[in-house]
Amino acid sequence: MSRKNAANLSPRIANRKALHDYFIESKLECGIVLVGSEVKALRAGNAQLAEAFAKVERGELVLHQCHIDPYEQANLMNHIPVRPRKLLAHRKEIKRLAELTKDHGVTLVPLALYFKDGRVKVEIAVGRGKRREDKRASIKEKEMKRDMRRIMTKRQ
Image 1 (cartoon, helix red, strand yellow):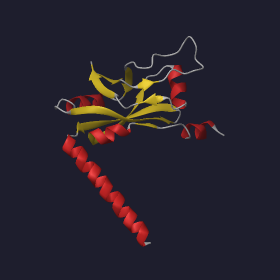
Image 2 (cartoon, rainbow, N blue to C red):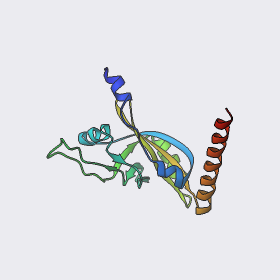
Image 3 (cartoon, rainbow, N blue to C red):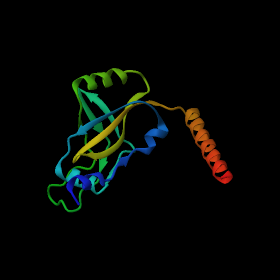
Image 4 (cartoon, one colour):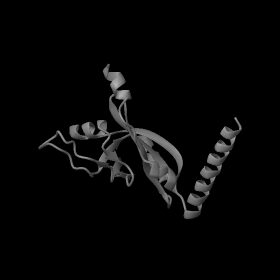
């Protein structure tokens, strides 16, 4: 199997909780600065984005609370599981994200970690927090769609 095909089979670590907790307004794909054992752990699918968020700090985009499990085969040179990780984006994009997140209740949420052309990419989104009523409404809407699909499949 070629290296390019192997990269396409790598796991995509998704943050399903973000879609439940936030209204997604815009998305951005950016790179991430990692050490070697972190990349190996990501290839094995050992990461969690559930509590992660991004911030603009001193003109740089930083990912916080992203948990990447230690790589089992790395012994002395293993990485720290939860540490701030720098995200790579153009200066204009970082300024735009900083402007968008000045409002109350708006944050940068990572949606997914994945490999693209052998490099790790992070999809971050500008998210506006949902209220309890909004969450209930989206759950109700999903259930209605599911019921409609069931009815349609029974007819066929």
